[in-house]
Image 1 (cartoon, rainbow, N blue to C red):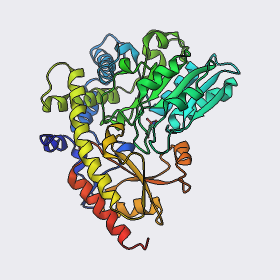
Image 2 (cartoon, protein in one colour):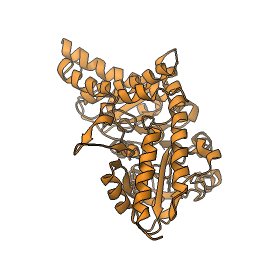
Image 3 (tube, protein in one colour):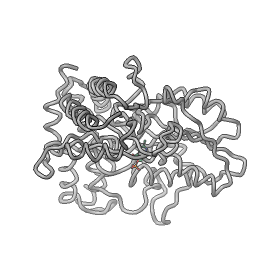
Image 4 (cartoon, rainbow, N blue to C red):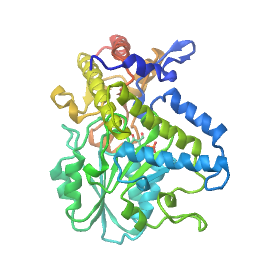
Length: 418
Ligand SMILES: Cc1ncc(COP(=O)(O)O)c(C=O)c1O
């Protein structure tokens, strides 16, 4: 990790150097969306000049546009370890796709059937299931997480899954506490009674490689703008399962493959940018010395990036723990940092999280405060103000970024009697 090529990586991200009101900013708002490499922005622009056409035609630009779509599916198949690009559905966002997939998956639910959701999830993996359960008369069961480990206990999942469970929706990593679930184990337990498992990997995907086949789940969703790409969501689903689902589509559109679930004309410029984002990650793997195919380079890239991120999150949590009056949610034991992504949320005894975020903004530190669209998580953690301050690290952050954030926090709290 001392060799982590941070200078070369930062040089790839022009957004990190931008000035706002003439001043630089420190991007620690990453869980809400990351910066993109120049190659990603350029791919979108180039697509609009060089491949700007609808897909499926006989003429050159249309053939190029058709390739853009196929390339994006192939890139995401490599990114997620999918068996085939035919398992990749791409759409507006994780939330939009999950509402749509929930409708397709839940179409035949009946009264008495059960869907299990968790309090650890972003509402993007709760509300779509509430909605379809409501419409079909199915029952929702909410699994709590352990407030100490901030992970889902296998016993808690076992208690919720019954012979009536048709689907379990759970998260890979929390967007509030950063805790990572043992998804393979939870999937095994959920599937014992034949339930399908839908995994929200939005907060995991920017930090670690994902292997959908090793996880054993049935569906997995992520968002490209959280992993250095454009504003698109992606759902991986087993090919046979996808093929068996009803797709709400217009009649003339093809009924073959994942495009059944992609309504209307594809956002080809964003798809082109998506391929570039995956290629960026593979490029980072190459920088770190990986050889081999794109998938192997992606795996190596995240191994290097997550080791770097662990150094930064250790520095951040060590610094936060020195500040009086803070309550940090999630794992703070360094021995367990492998069970968290570098997303750290906290509240202060007297100052509101929104006030702290505003003061940090004045110091050029970009962070989010609020419920982070995870209202069940906020409730279980007894964050009564419904707002926590969240600092989220990406691999392009530096030790200096953390020093700047901690210094700004200390000066905010210095003026407050605790
Ligand atoms: C864990 C998690 N799931 C889902 C979402 C929703 O993703 P999208 O914005 O693509 O709908 C987010 C966004 O913050 C998230 O953090």
